[in-house]
Length: 409
Ligand SMILES: Cc1ncc(COP(=O)(O)O)c(C=O)c1O
Image 1 (cartoon, rainbow, N blue to C red):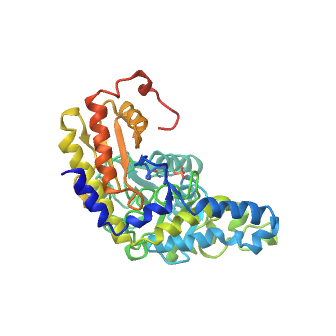
Image 2: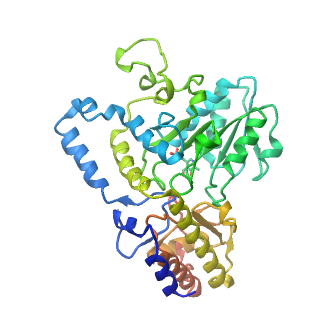
Image 3: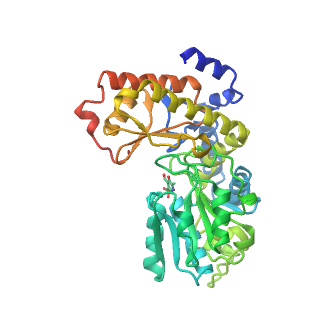
């Protein structure tokens, strides 16, 4: 393979036109859309309009005039299209951690005859921390953790909720969501999927798979911006029976009746808590509209093409430098990032960043390279591996400055 082959792939890429709809620093190879998606070109103007005209001129009347109050459900309807859900099953709100708390608390309330939340030890820590917090609060809740791949064997009649990440944040392993959902249902458990690393890059059909509950982040592949609101999904067959344990006024049937007694809104709206983050929802809507313009099957095909070629090139060109590929080599079992293992991973990531290739690092030794099919080109794959080869051959990583540990890795 030569660079020219990658240029040819870009010429034939049906998604090539999307890149220009993002604002990216020239020359930068950004492989971290799985952590913070890049900035859509339309977002600054949308935010400026919201701040200067809606907030600045129309002030409080904007809640009605510009329908700010509807944004959580309006953005939710867009998310529903992306997630293969019904339009009234998704809400944009809060952070993923808070949404986990709300949905897990509600699910445990519904399944009070069962006490176990079943998850994997390697699941994203916030998912596990939220269960631990709920266990402290409620009592009679057990977090049962199994090694990766052990869920089916650990399913029994005590399991209330199976809590899984669709794509593993470290390795990029993609689980078979319809199959796992069906297995959980067969044992009478509910299933809650964390879609943080799959929404926007892996086709998702929550209604068809009959998923019970799901959450995910707005700031990753959905390009909603730093700290963007997250989302939550509740299957319509459950919504009326679930109670939001964070029973704030925006989840009330009539928030502006100022009723002293909490009465939940009908359907998904009850999973709102406080005043919606309007600026964040506006930015998330821009990112989502961009992502929704793309054909999800084409996105998935390109994602596989990029990750596949990246893994193959690393194997071919970095073989002698001590890297191991931590992601599944079967593309059907992989999301849109490739994880490499290397004992000097942190220093290598710093050295690459200084050379214009941005990935990130996860303890203890994982280098993550995320590919956003609407942004990344095939030549980015070639150039990123070329930069990696240079960093390794020249031992550029071997610099005390690159051993530093920033707060955010
Ligand atoms: C899989 C997964 N779940 C949850 C979160 C945390 O989301 P939040 O910070 O919105 O609570 C992350 C953050 O990276 C994540 O990767």
